[in-house]
Length: 231
Image 1: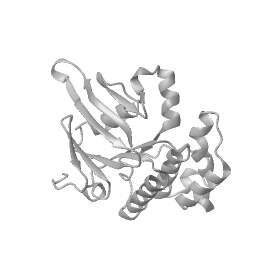
Image 2: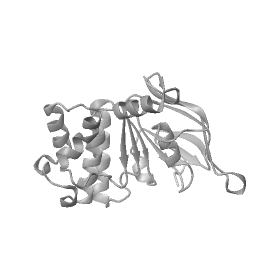
Image 3: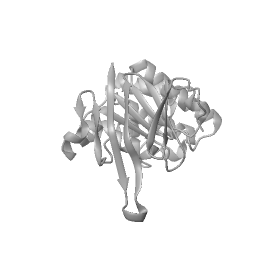
């Protein structure tokens, strides 16, 4: 069943000689529980695409429809609430709150929405992350891999329908990279969450269900186990 439909998405920055067409009539869809990745060179439009899909940036034209809701038909306040309840974000830089411990960082998006997680959901996430024994640790007391796992857990705990991950393994070594990918894959399968991930790694892209390549703002769907080179 389709969760996300992106249609004719275009985004331009600057004007005149500095005008850049970051996205050129991009269209694609994702099914529930599908794990897709976007590959492409730096400056190709990957992050712009992710930000527009997540409602963090507004396209010049086109639509993003998620679960029957058109994001840009909503007011800014409505879009913020919808995003908070339906979309999880994972960034390369972790973006944890230094004064909050693991458990508090995990709960933070729910608390912003004036909700509290069920105790069993929190315990399940901590167990999945392998961080049950570090629940009281602050971010600076964790390794880079552990911090990224917390960032992923923070996105997972509200059980969003869509997770957008922008180079989530970019700052990690090979062992932690594999752990993070395994975690994302397990979450996708366990809760039928749809994941759209940006990566520069051909080997990571090959582990996902589907590969989308973007070049100079133009999107090409390479399908599953892409036959074309990813670089």
